[in-house]
Image (spheres, rainbow, N blue to C red):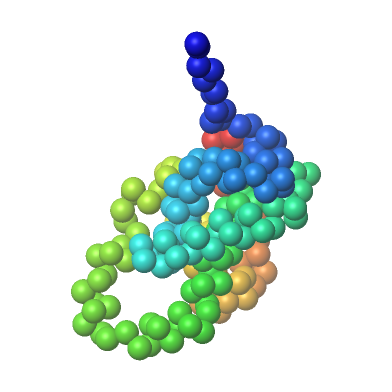
Length: 189
């Protein structure tokens, strides 16, 4: 007697994956995690600069994606961009949370000082999507604005105060930086 073998589909298009997630299909969730966790991890670690916190946050990100998939609207942007925004916002919210701020205050100074190598962002292994290379091709002032706004969570008002430049200048420079970045990212789509 011949046994039937079943082939499990392991590659889904973005549209198929979204349908599976909206149906709360666990296979879709596993595919999502297997194929996107590296990129989202890279975004988060660049913001929080700690493996320990990143591992905690990545779990929250996937739960948020799972629970809010019905809110995704393909007419407003790509699924990948939507997920990166969730990851970015979750990481920034975590850094601004009172519990995180209290934890930093209560951490003994020697432990914090000795762990600075773990907090380093110069490690390119966290750059799973190659974004560092794209970002480095921008002028230094544009890199700084992108870094402050998207990785450190500063508002345009806070950037204006921090850099001691007018808010209108920040807005103009940020728009120019994002347009240049969009231009550079066309090759990656």
